[in-house]
Length: 455
Ligand code: PFF
Image: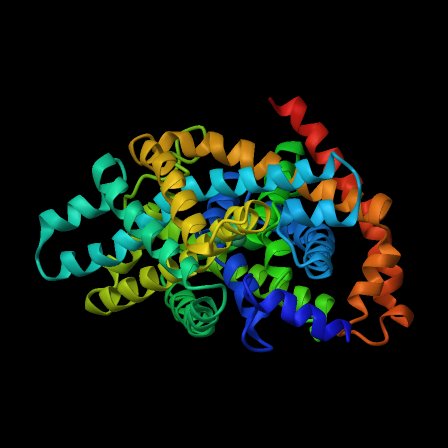
């Protein structure tokens, strides 16, 4: 009976996932994006190689996964956007503001995300222009410092996102993710094999896989925590929103485990490609590090290293280059959709606006901020610190506190029992509450407090 009520409540205006796989695909589509292929390898290169990898794995599995389960459960229980969800589960005046903070983080992250996604999309064309001899066009499209070009491509990207969002939540995302993910993994694997056979790549493999534990400091832990939250799409209610379209038949911990594994797995593969490729590029004369050992430009690192790699492969490199950057663009698109869906679902639920009006108004508003970033990409670093590295873990901290001490883990486990029949007797029911009550909030709080010392 309850199932039916919920299905009808969520499938009328708000939409719901089409297939059983729909949610998993959409959540994985949200998670896998620029964070994996642009963000993660750059952070590895900037923060001590394998030492960063280890802390990132720990923060993703031990902190990210429990918070992901928490977000999806809140979303499915309430069938609401992040603000409405907190309102529905408590009479607290404070926690809806946490939802609102998530909406704001979504808006600000999307504003710079579209600019970087535009770069990735542009590089697919750069490879083509370069091959057919349109050298000037190739130079134009690859110039990440060209404000009007950045603005144009970011606008194309935002319009595509708005268009998909106005069409409803499911079909486009599900279909795009289903083909994009296996293809992306395939291309990554082939490229990794190619790179590993190049003389000079071993230095990169050592840097990526052999940890120097002395490099672990509070700065590194802070970056790894932020990267995990960003990459898993956590802390701003994206998964509360996606969870709100989820049917009661779905097993939440299992779905969250799949999404976490897929996301971390793809980030790991991207690192295995890009870190050795970075050392190769460097031995071919591409300047990557300053004398101080820091990256010359962390925002554009991946867009320097990968094209250099594709060009070094000859004609076949063009095919790989175009395929790779197109796949990366699709991966970014399934993430921008989830970023925009957060404020859009908030406006639909809380202000009774139509999906179409909400998507266009908010989407174009965010695009206005993107226009500023298109001309000033140096702002991205500041946005990353405030909205990713501080904003998302802070959101995750408050979500954990909310479940642990306001809504209570028993109620959350009760909600999870739909789709996971024996949950009460499972190991999960013993371990997850410990993480949500103590380990996640304390670890995040510790990291954020340490951060105060960094600045
Ligand atoms: N997870 C996405 C990526 O790794 O590119 C970015 C992202 C999407 C962050 C959705 C936050 C979010 F809510």
